[in-house]
Image 1 (tube, rainbow over the protein chains, first blue to last red):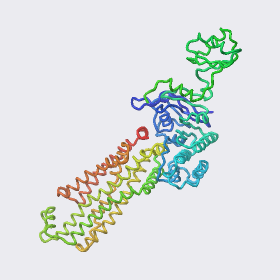
Image 2: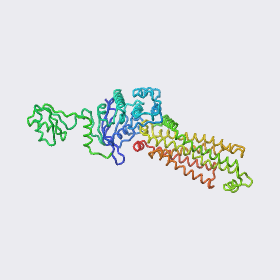
Image 3: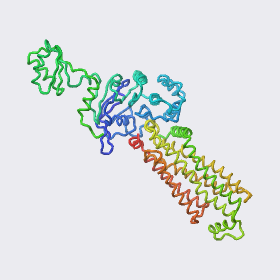
Image 4: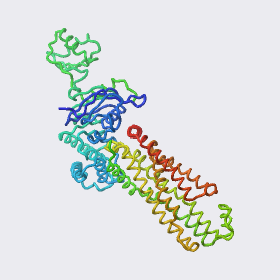
Length: 310
Length: 266
């Protein structure tokens, strides 16, 4: 399946400051892709480049077949994508209907058709019947939901969501998460920037962790197995087998019955650990990289990487 | 890249809607026209009601040393005052777009609405055109309506003296019809440029408002008798402002840069 988003060595500099460098990834139709990283890691800059708001300084990217930062000012690209910014950015004096109609006009849509689609989203997000109230009177959750509807009003193939559930109560957050999942099922490509890693684990199939550069990218299930903890099942008491690991530098271990949980100093030490156990006469039944939470993997990645100028 | 008027008009529609729902701004827009209409009407009314021929003759001689001894000094001074007042009246089309455009451009940054707006298909030129229309049309409309009220007020208070309508005359019609819209474009252009470079609407308003100083200088020159207010004087002013408008439009298109706006203000 042709990816909807293809990013090759993408970079952005603001004067001497490097915001993003050498990013490469691809996102397919119907996929929810997480873009993770600490504050100032370059997530927003990346999203701005992919939505045609900023021109890349290096590398290239295509979104829905439109080149990013090429000739023209990216109108066709912006027409194909929807963007939910970190702040909802609504016109408070205008009603929800007027806010949406404004974006329908900017997208030169048939207003009757677009409004019928918008009405569906208003119902889905529980805002039906409130569309003629000024946005200034909306709660934070309602504003966030309306901003999502605004991003969807022109039926984009790709949706960029920056912290979509930030500040929402659990029920509203659940509504938004369910909607994101449904939108992906409809075939939309969704890029989700979030610090809520539990939410990312729930919604995303794959993620990229960035801190100026790409630290890791891949399916969450693979990333969770990445790293330095091995679960080794041996015959007999693990305690006895574990004693053999004192010969391997930097390794620590704990034993629970036949199960050894070995923490490596370096993930490439796995063969060395197995060899040491076998040499000591242990019978090894299985060696499995330990599944950790995405949070553990993420923290390990961003802590290991020295901070770039951000 | 094609310019789509529909998108520019959408921006103007939204800004117009936002303006109508902002009573503070609407009231402030009407304050200046009220002053510029009421004050001269009161002055003319005072001169006509109890003219002090001696004092007014001195004023007439100051402005025209060849003023004929038997001529009506009150009439001369009223005519001169109405001609000079047009210089001050131009503050209205100049200042009103500054109030609106500062809010509409810098206000987008303050309210964090700029990024979603720039992420839509609207081009920089369409955005600029829409915002300019939203500022210039109300300014010119207010100027024209205020001129109608001003003409009626001046004619009413001057009637006992002149027994004929003083306004509209050719100079005022040319001024309000041609020069005032050019000033409105000037005020808007300056406010858009300043707003695109500063972070908040109040600062944008304050900096843009400095543009009224040269105009005040010109009016001071007229009052001091150094410049003679009249059709040719205002035609020259109009030509200079037209030139400035062209320069400002070119500069705005170049400086109203999407990337700069996003990276600095969103």
